[in-house]
Length: 352
Ligand code: MTE
Image (cartoon, rainbow, N blue to C red; front, side, top):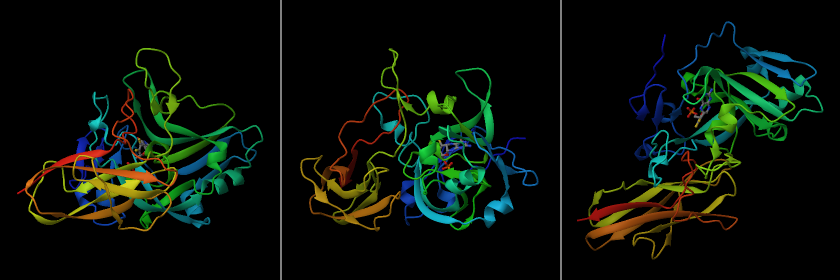
């Protein structure tokens, strides 16, 4: 049986597997409500039977463990606000075009996640000294177009990153049990990293001695910049500095007077400390104001009041700067799979 959950509130990019994006115009609060949160799946939804579900911890551990749901619920919980962004977000803006889901602006959303520190689960299993990485397996599986076989969605993290106190196995999203589409009963949350690391429908954690070589680790989710020559591509990790105009939208017609320009900014590395807007195609820039406080791992909304006295065509741009002095640039870092688009956003509006 195929489960389709398809939300009518989201922008659909694909029905099978279900891939839907957050409509940026619906950005009325910092936290994205469940029905608007983007969805990125590689396979059909898995069947989850809570009578048998458990989370196993195995491999290079002295005490293999099998946690039932009620046991996880009873463990100490932490709550973290974390923005998830698919590394394919904004892929449709790459020139030349690249393969993959043609996401617009909204393969990104923000929620408050509550769960158990992965550290606590690993400590309970007593990780062996020669352990090197930890793999995370989702319950969903299916075929790939580029190699034979059936694969689960499986990723790895270094042992060090797995033991980071902010890496959690989430059981709740926005104060309610994790929704099925977002990985019920448990998912990994890797704050600051692109969304591929946050494995949904998690049921198996294996501690290993070597580098994990699964296709969702070494074939997908690498920045491959040389299509024709062999290269050793850089793995995708933290969310790049980025900013987005939610409103007005590209090609919108506005009236003279006061118009609000607003949107979001994010970085998974150094905090964003400035967002600037240009209405003259990047010749002059003015600072926007923050609508949200700084919070680690979280997008931050900004706004800017634009007083327009002259009718005409305006090229609006937004760019963000971080505390390390990095600034978004005009050119995207083109790569074969269309990952990590973070060029300055440019829209054109008309004032009557
Ligand atoms: N986990 C499993 N089990 N299967 C998946 O297809 N997709 C990953 C990640 N975790 C995926 C997964 C990707 S690429 C992203 S961007 C996020 O989940 C999306 O999370 P969401 O659907 O809750 O927004």
